[in-house]
Length: 128
Figure 1 (cartoon, one colour):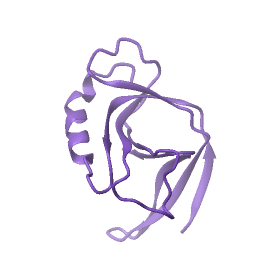
Figure 2 (spheres, one colour; figure 1 turned 90 degrees about the vertical axis):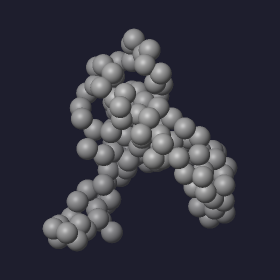
Figure 3 (cartoon, rainbow, N blue to C red; figure 1 turned 180 degrees about the vertical axis):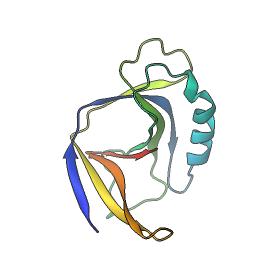
């Protein structure tokens, strides 16, 4: 697999979060609650959406436990987080680096970058 690492500035994310596990995945419910409210977020920087998982410090894929809980976010990036009264939360993502891993899209046979933020305890996927 090909990849590229890029350094990024911190990001201010606004969105909703939910505690879940791999065994009790609530991703669908999280995004279904966020998407109808996304247009209420002011000061958006772009049209990207951020799916972020925050794992506990003792999380390990080597000793994987599908019932271990983590917090998942559905969010957008803003330039500042004033006037947040839409039932959403703010998260300052102090990103150190971003990994672009490339996958082959078999439908059109080309390499497509999948940006993932890699930070201790975090995995953030950017979708547009």
